[in-house]
Image (cartoon, rainbow, N blue to C red):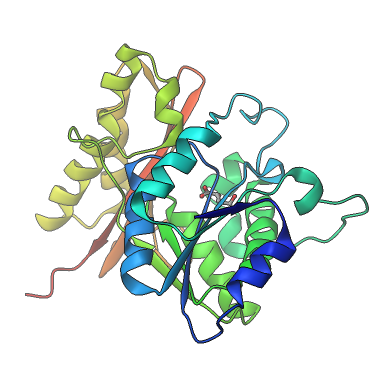
Length: 282
Ligand code: PAF
């Protein structure tokens, strides 16, 4: 496994044999089983696999957890070595944002609601760094988790609009045995918050059960999720949403599909989760 912070080394390795396909998993490190499942999928689909580890400052607002975002490069590299990665790109801020950097990449409408409403500068940071990583790596396929549903929708739009020559592959959310979506931030939860946080997947599952039972009223579904979360004293709702999975606009009546999503604080830790509901075909 080659590990490098240098763009020119990435390019040399990537293009050493242009006939090989490359799968790419961008990460901010502190890897968990959810990341490793993306790597495994990339390994199954491609001749070579690259991972980037970079905590991107531009996607954090000044009030957010950049300085406390968990990091452990040694452990991350050991995990990646075990799963069989070929190349790990570990740039620092000077490589990604050299002095004089002033370019932005923004995807407009789908960046605005949900995460975008709570974190107005977040997606501009994600799109600029992912556009740079795609240009540096030039992968055949790039892998993202459904856990960050809006990030996936924003990046799919960016790939289409800017003609990136790659396939964006979306993989299911990795979950702990009790249903909590895997996240690098889970490590900051106290034992009480960790156990309270199961309310997220529970309320999403309850809403999915209601959809299967025929409930189509957006307000009723949002109220059901809110009521379940409010009953958990350690949880504070940021948003609860039942939206169209393409436009991310809230729906009054669910038709054939809906993205159920939420963001909830446990103390200072903000967790997100979602489930995509599609009308059963038979
Ligand atoms: O999902 C993440 O971990 C980050 O947003 C990403 C895609 C690595 C960009 O920094």
